[in-house]
Amino acid sequence: MLSKIVRTVSNQLIVFILIFGLYIIMHGHITPGGGFQGGAVIASGVVMLLVAFGSSDIKKALRERRLSVLESSGALIFIGVAFAGIGTVFFYNFLVGTPIFGEIPPIGSNSGNVWTGGVIPLMNLSVGLKVLAGLSAIVLAMALFSSGEEMEE
Image (cartoon, rainbow, N blue to C red):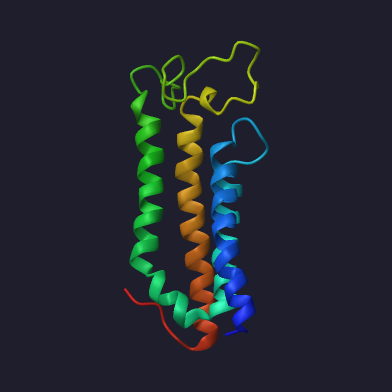
């Protein structure tokens, strides 16, 4: 465990890292980024907390079951959205032209409007959930293994 200053700064920074990761996930269809990149950013926040507080403190907050549920939720959302448009084709963008992420931009395909992606923001969100849970579980398992502890069910 590091000094009180490092722990305090980490507590303040994690909020901004989470917000930035969510920004990358939700704007992945109009900017460089997406679910994988945003999930990796959020997982890097978990790494920062592991370094600042140690693996035993973080293990209490991040249980293996919670990470597993988060990762499975991402997979189910991804599969659900992919099959939702199956009446036409697999991965059909059924939200285009609807009020939910389906607004058609008047200027072209990349007007910078987050509501123009159809199902792509939902796909990015599901991939982000899988990546942040998977990478966090891997890093937490490595930290616990190096400290001689084990992950709990």
